[in-house]
Length: 215
Image 1 (cartoon, rainbow, N blue to C red):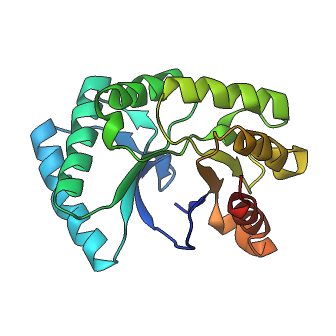
Image 2: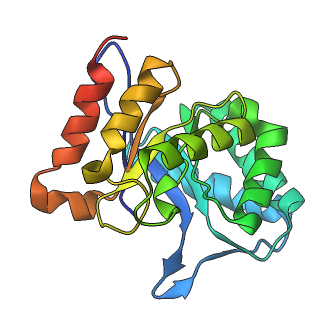
């Protein structure tokens, strides 16, 4: 899973997160299906701490998309995981990557309600909306999700695999400029680096340039 996102900062730096979940593994859907909250949290803290320290990573990105557990169980598992990793000094930030699907939203909004104060970024998958999304539609979607995750640092997002949403060719950066002028753009989230490599990460560079412009 390859993700790139740029945040507006005074200094140029890169933070790398380990993503949990994803859509599928080996062609089969990847389900969030813990046997118990305690055992899941214990195992996750142990294994993730080892991996994060070994590769000198900075944070975790929660990207579960399929569930065989209710929202309360998801909330407790993920909330306790983030809390423990932060308290132990293992990670400096955590993000979530929901998209506009009833089941997905029910789980992530429950998590946000209880643990939003320890989640640093909302990497909302706006590219999961229909291909051909317009600037005005995108602005409406962004406003809706900012309301759903009130108080969160919401990142605008697009895909470089042409899968959907508002594309750079159709006005993504126009929308970002409008959000930036209103002080609502916390950063930009791009899916995916694998697809961006062939054009020299053109749109990632454009994203960074836009974010670097003073208000």
